[in-house]
Image 1: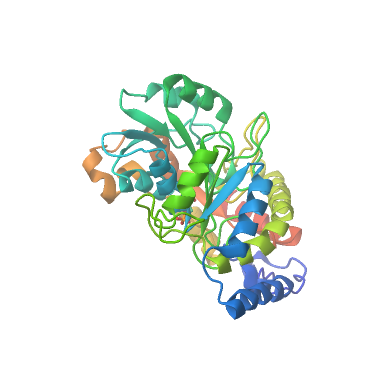
Image 2: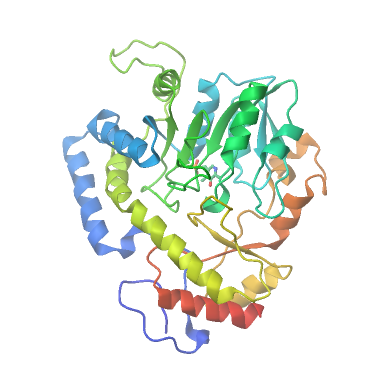
Length: 387
Ligand SMILES: *Cc1c(COP(=O)(O)O)cnc(C)c1O
């Protein structure tokens, strides 16, 4: 029996009928990491140093270095990262922001939260990502910004989008919530090509905390200063009770920052492991009926999610579940077809690529603590049910 839980070495691959592979495995499965994390939690708790302070400042420096960015600002979530990025860029009512339809809901939600209107657009069929020509075709007189999403951990080709945006005078906010550490085509890391990169540390992300958390990175010191004000009531970091602007409460907790500092030291290795396992899975599934994920040409993929496509998606998921293999859909309803955005009036067929993908995508289990035996067992089951 293959069990991807616990830390014991898996037994030899037996009958695939007894395979048990969960969708993800978090920190509690790693006792060594857990001990280190409990220690920093105790340390922060003992000092009752819960907001701002040295843990946060340290993590911000470390995370900026990891991203290859001059500065990072810790915030309350990936959604807050996007909202505060748009606020720092003074985007609001009357403005339009271009957002791909096949992202997590929050990519568009953030736009609505600042009072602007998301212009939800289709994606390139081969990659499922936004491109410069898609952006170009959707620029209108009131377009102020584009939010490219490095979906599933695959890098968007940022350079042509940034060039186009500069010429058009619009801002670029990268949604890097699924792509911590991914290398962009032409160099540099995801999140550093545009004006602001937005990260989530939701527990299941490639870098995840113990609850909600997020960060923004930027090379622009004025934006960084504005973001630091916005996340903490517009209060001057150097002068208590001096509220310079109207902000909000959206800080990254010191506890989360301390936890993330420990985990950040392992992230490079975890990403390498994800790439390695994904390559093994892709090799094992080559020749199957499934469409397999591709690493963007010249770019990178850190496999936050390993997403296959098939016309028989629902049957595939049911058959996998029956054999103990978990799966998921990211995301079953494209943003423009959600109830929340009914008012946009974008009916079925309005964004055909995103809509077709939504009916065909299936995320298979892939996480750094998987062994190659797990991947072998997973591939065996997938081949058995998908052919
Ligand atoms: C997770 C995620 C978000 C939102 O992050 P939260 O921390 O959950 O608020 C935004 N965009 C994408 C693409 C995501 O995957």
